[in-house]
Length: 150
Length: 150
DNA sequence: GCATAAAGTTAGACAGTGCTAACAATCTGC
DNA sequence: GCAGATTGTTAGCACTGTCTAACTTTATGC
Image (cartoon, rainbow over all chains, first blue to last red; front, side, top):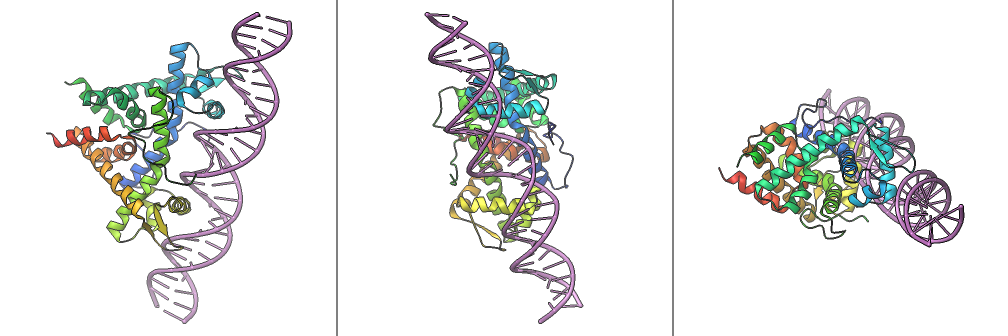
């Protein structure tokens, strides 16, 4: 009940055959991971940019309060994505680092795709943030191909 | 505290200037409405297909249990999107109908876009379900234009 | 029209995400 | 090295969304 839920964007295996229902289940599944993905991606970014990821910076970037971050970090630690010590900044585990990398990859592809479609960078950033968690590997491949054409 | 939260995909007005933070806030905002949007869209569909929307059908389609649907329908009623009477099927209010129509429109555009990109219909359906809630009006316009070109 | 099946509701558990308020630890600048 | 500022934690509340179990109501089939 406390483990990280694996990616099912590409192949949700359980549940009935109806594609609509499958779609809804896939989305619910994805939604469960969204926040964790945002966090690890951001943590990786902060570590890269400033050498460490502090709750206060995470909170500022996400636009939430520090106690909210603290609680969510507890969950991420439980799920094995990060390690942390009291009053210290946050580190990614190997698993967390891998997830962050994967997220960054997806984010980049979606962002480049939207921009190459003709979207302004600001809107592209906002839309990419929302879309990246819901894009199958197959779609991602098409996005990447499109962005590389031209 | 119980009203429906308006669409901020296009123009989140509050919060600081940092575009990344704005993006995160926009996404959180969007996430708050996702489930409601899924419900009203599905309810409209069921009413169209079978003349009425019963909790048991909603539950089956979404892949959740009936009590879950019941509770969520209470919320939607509180928010003025649907009306319902005990042990009776569900109806959309004008507001709900408008939202459903808007959701359907977005869904259609995203779906057609993905398919015209070359994605198989099954995957397109799953991805569209996740993406439709996170697409700005601007992006939607580009998607529509792309799907209509060719 | 009554017994049973199906559908719907209510209650209660539990986890997640957000908040504020109060407290604890750490860091900073003399 | 100590005072005050900053950062982090904990506790407690609210709401959502999911479930199961138990109950009520409605529909169905003789």
